Image (cartoon, rainbow, N blue to C red; front, side, top):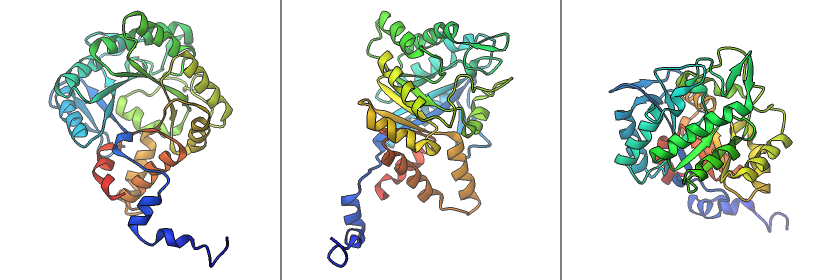
Length: 325
């Protein structure tokens, strides 16, 4: 039916009716809050390229995690910054490492908060790559053993979910098998499945001190021009035992989120990465955009594209505004 019988504006004439007919809904239940944890005490070190985001020592991390939980945020994901790094990333799978201790402390002080851990050795290696390096080459199969050991120590520390982000082939299968063989068959596995070699990661690499010391990560992270490849990676991870699949970054890869959501029957996560966060913050600080409105519109767009879960540094800020949107 055409105008004037049909008038689309009838359903836009009040906030109440717009809320009732909205197709995509953003909820605090969708959010996962990334946290950076470092050694020491009393440390709250703001990351210069990520206003409002900090590196926390464990004592401060506990309070930050509790505040997130009190806002209704169901989960946090931990990224560790060790004092010592070496070529094998040994602190990544140290049973008493920074992440392992942080898991135990959070679960002790806030047991109902879901704790997720990033499983990758780049933050723990002196070369900054996500795998073992030999003669300038990133070794795939040899790295799987280290990732499995890392995931196992997280499980032994009480983690609820592990999230391998390294993009080594076969890592989901290796980690799932290790967890199952050691009695941790109930640990959830969220795979960074379609993780692109993106320039949007810059601020994160400052936060986690994880920039590669040579070359780049294009031999294991995906080419930004590829869409079908993202689906292949997702299908492979599901076959290997992933319970949740992820697209990273989110904002420039909405088409990938949408394609994956249409073809899989597991939850899909989107990582609203550091560069996306920092661009909005910078524009807001300069008065170029309304930061709150752009933040909420951006997160809502990820839901509209099909994401069930959103990892975002905006989590606490967005949670306080949910009742308004």
